[in-house]
Length: 365
Ligand SMILES: [Fe+2]
Image 1 (tube, rainbow, N blue to C red):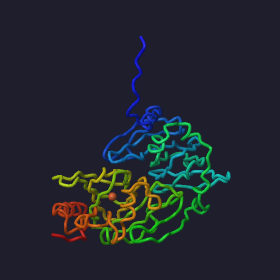
Image 2 (cartoon, rainbow, N blue to C red; image 1 turned 30 degrees about the horizontal axis):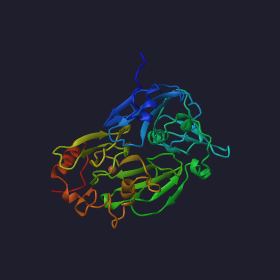
Image 3 (tube, helix red, strand yellow; image 1 turned 180 degrees about the vertical axis):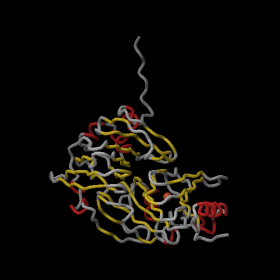
Image 4 (tube, rainbow, N blue to C red; image 1 turned 90 degrees about the vertical axis):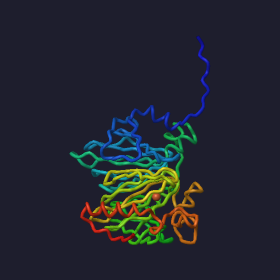
């Protein structure tokens, strides 16, 4: 019997590709990246898992990469961007620039780096006894869904010379580019330790709040790091989906809710936790630890190349005169000022800090 052709509709080429890779996919609101199972990933020559958070949006996804002691990944080159964050272990990565020049850098826990677009690269675990675990945020979904041709994405000789950047960008140095509070940039390809990098004050997001925005390998992929002081929390805000939030130092929790929802969703975080607030969902971060808490966020659409109108608004809305994420909902923006928040939010924070033996520095109600 001749089968009728099934109409080809509703295809997600990225998900189709992933099915053929033979690695597990974890789907959840938030996950502990240190705990999820990885399986051999032939393409990469290491163990891997895909992480699809509920708020991952249309453009990006995450993969956990696990390198056994002494192991190295097989050489890679691809037409999508990658921002990697080291969860555990120590090793190095070699990137081959367009001119054939090799750049190597050594990473350890809390290192952040990007692979310049379509350069050849390879990861090495520098320890003979400890595994190394990295998480990468990639734009593979948008790229594969755009071209739906695997060879074009994974076997493409085009050289993006302008993406490689200065040699010093591979050595832990970078260029500070002042913009406005909340928007100051650090341009580089590699940050040795996110716990150590100097951040800049952003008081509009709450007293003592600090951040820096990364421009990595001149990419469209965004990354920023924020810090909350001991005994403090940030103002609630909302934006489009796809910000993947990872705890770097300290511990605490975040509350998430859609406008009008009677209850909050809660995510407790510590090193290894990632979560992604879904589209237009309010979220608010609380430091419940006796140390400053830093978190890293990755997303598609950078301050330099916002890509979508909603990112343009949330990225460039840091200035008080512009609309956007630092403007009160009462003025049509997407931030809830402390005096406008539900009293339950502060009550919960007082309880949580008391339990942790931390003095809540913020006084409301
Ligand atoms: Fe956010």
